[in-house]
Image (cartoon, rainbow, N blue to C red):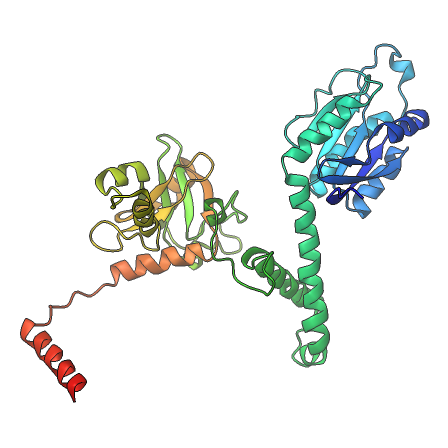
Length: 387
C-alpha cells in the first residue's frame, strides 16, 4: 500500500451539480506526499457555514467572473458568493485557496503563494491540480495543520492532566472563572508550542533556534515595548528600544505613555563589525566557533566587554549588533512620526537584551589583586595538596 503521508481536508465548492461531479472524478485523491479528502459542496451559503464551523486545510472554489459565452443572463445568483467565501476565510483563519473559473481572474482578488487562480476551461483539471501542487510546495498547509493538531494536543493534555486533577482546588481558590481558565490554558499552550521541542520524546526546551524566532512581526501590541526594533523612515537605520514596558504603557484616556522620552540603542551592521573584529582561527571550523561567540548574549567581542548584542537578520533587516555605547533618548512623539515599528524581540530574547544592558551599565571596576597575594594563594594551595 502506498503511503501518501499527511491527509489534508479539502472543501470543494461548485454551484453547478454536473461540474461538481466532474471535478470529483477529475481531482486526484493524492498528490505526492499528501492524501486529499474532498468535501463537496454545491451551495455557497452552505460552504460559508462549513468554513465557520469546520477546519479545512485547502479550499477549491468556483467563482463567477464575466462569463462572455453566457452573458449576465447566465449568471447563477449563488456565483457571486464565492468571493464571500474567500473574504470569510481571510477574516477568520488561514486556509490556502484555489479559485477557478472559465473566465478572466477577478480583479478584486490579489493572488499570491496562498491564493491561486486556475483555468476551469481545461477539461482535464490539470491547471487546478498544478495550482494545488504550487500551494503544497510551500509547505505552509502542512505546517498549519501540524500547528492546529499540536495546539489541540497541548491544550487538551493540559485540560485532562492538570485541570481535571486540580479542579476542586482551583474552585476553592477562586480560579475556576472561565476568563481566568482561558488565560491559563492559552499561556500553557503558547509555552508548550513555542518553547518545547515538538519532536522530542519527553518535554524538553528547544536548544537551538533560527534567527527569525527572535522576533514577533508585526508587533502584536499598539504600545512600544522593550526590545522593539525601530526603522528610521528617512535613512533606514535601525535602533532598539531599551525603556522598560511599564514606562511605555498608555493609561486609559491617555494618548501617550508616562515616559516622554524613549531610550534607544543604535545598531551597527555585522559587516562593519566583522571588518574591525574578523573571526579568529586558521580553519573554517575555528572561525565558525569564533563567530558563534560573537552571537552570544552579550557578544564576545569589542571593548568594553559586553558592549554589543547580536540581532540576526530578519526580512530586509541585515545582521546587526546593538551598541550599548551609542544610546539616544528620543521624544515619544518623534518616535511615532519619524520611525516605523519593524519588529519586537520575543521572550526570552527581550529579557536577555535587558539583562545584558543593565549588567553593562552596572559594572563596578575593582583594583587588581597584588601579585604577592596571588603567589601566596598559589603557595597555600600547593601546601594543601602535599599534606
